[in-house]
Amino acid sequence: MTASAERTEPAPAGRPTKVRQKKYNRREALAGLAFISPWLIGFLIFTLGAMIYSLYISFTYYSLAKNTATPAGLANYQLLFEDPKVLMSLGNTLYYAVLAVPLELIVALALALLLNGARRGAGFFRTTFYLPKMTPAVATASVFLLLLNGNQGAINKFLARFGIQGPQWLLDPDWIIPSIVLMQLWAVCGTMVIFLAALKNVPRELYEVAELDGAGPIRRFTAITLPMISGALFFNFIVLTIAALQIFDQAYLLFYRDNTMAAPDASLFYGIYLFQQAFRQFNFGFASAMAWLIFLIIMAISVVQVRIGNRFVYYESER
Amino acid sequence: MVTTQDRLPAAVGPLVTEGMTPPPKGPPRRSIAADAPLTARGKVGQVIRWLALIVLTGMFMYPFFWLLSASFKPRGEVFDNRLIPLTFQPENYVLVFQELPLLNWIGNSVFIAVMAAGLVTITSSIVAFGFAYFNFPLRGLLFGFVLATMMLPGAVTLVPQYLIWNNLGLVGTNVPLWGANLFGSAFYIFMQRQFFMGLPRETFEASRVDGLTYWGMFWRIALPLSVPSFIIIFLFEFQASWNNLQAALIYLNAGSPEQYTVPLGISSAMVKYSPTAGGHGDYQYVMVASLLVTLPMLVLFAFGQRYFIEGIATQGRKG
Image (tube, rainbow over all chains, first blue to last red; front, side, top):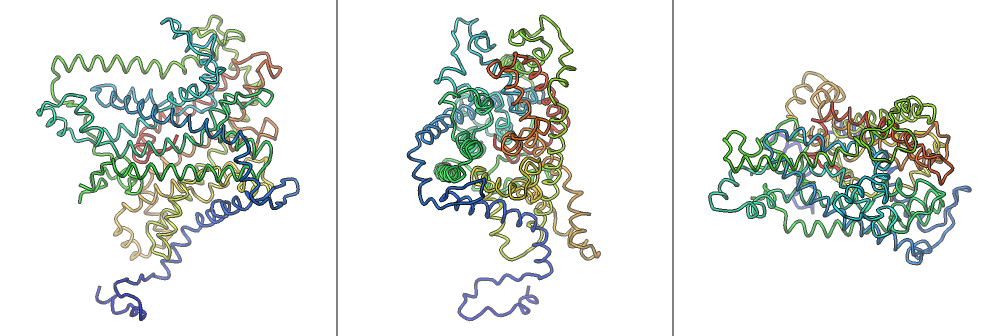
């Protein structure tokens, strides 16, 4: 340290000396920049540049045919509030997220707990639970389209055996969003795997001690398991929420694949409407304004989640 | 302070980082007391658990069996929910190739997925090495940008990216479906950097002394050590690309059906056979196609299960 400190130039006057001057080896710095240059170029063009451009065209009327953008002022943003479909699709999307995310968390956690306690065969069951996650959405949709059929679908046939009259899943506006939630739940096991990893990491001794103290299974779950996996719970919560707010594939495949058919209002999600505005109507300015609105909403929700999460999440490293 | 990283097996440990608070993954602990003999109550518990797991497996696997049997049924019987077809029609598997350009779709999707996954694996690793090993000005800030792009909703850059590809005259080709991967992808850069950070620096210092170039260090030392995370990235991206519906809708929908990818193709087939669009309800072909495009994913999972589970368990992944 002393040798190199002597070679370091003295800090310029007026600068606090405690700020250690970073010294870069010129060759190394250049090599580093060369290594990251593919990302840097892509970032400047496809992310940062694209974001700035997106902001710009959100204030214009963009004509794809002429490749021109005429200034529109705030018109696109005003339209966000005037177009009832924006609010409707936003409402559908939030409703979907509120319904889907907790259910996904609960089902995934329940499955993980069930698997974690199995003495034998956990690997086999984990594999079978995971296969739906590997199935392309288009295949899932083509099967569920028929499973969810209100009259002949296997799900309602199954319910009928117990004397339950199943709903018209894909026709009744009240059941459209739950149908999509159901499809998502079938493929929930990516989330389950994260829980499973967290559960495996809970020290077994904690349970043994708690059991000696006379804690029952429920108490053990709330006092040990939940706090110990709160990190994973929180992580899944955020990731699933962001994914839910951007839902597209399932709704598109079930309701929007066929242009000749009118889709029910309840299936119009924000991502679908944005896609229609951008690539069916080619209203690029309006679509960009829509994109920035959902961007702000996702950011706001994430910030709130992180705030809440920081109060409840138990990090082992902070002990 | 013992961080979670210290307790991780070397292969996956460095993937975990403080920033995203992923679930900690510990040394493989046997679930429950696998070594202790079970009490009578414990045995009953295990049996109930097994029964629940078997029922659940039935629920998760049912759509696969439904799909398999539907793919062997003639028109009109596709929806009858029989798991053993009344009329067995294996020729569906031959006819589907005359009915639909399925081979083209699979060929296109394989090409795109290999390009997308291959490029993103290589480039992300190069960039990650730049961030992990070298010291250069603004490194912290730039890496902050990498992390930030992971949170960015795709909608914000959707329109400008379309305009970029449009100006390059590449809309209608499959280049936009893999081209941006040439610049790496934030999530994988992050993941791979964590891995490289876990490698002992002395290995590299020694090789420098031996006269290896920076590129040689990456190519000859860092790469061979990171084969497992290489495989994880490749598999994740291959799957993501294989399932990518939205990009295909944006860039290929206007073209000829021969240019479609698997998700877009099957989505169009669902419309083609729909009576409302003038079809005759030959949904058995949709089922055959759905099954055939799901199989490669299941095979991929069969061979790469360890990597999928490891990758997801350590990182989490949206969706």
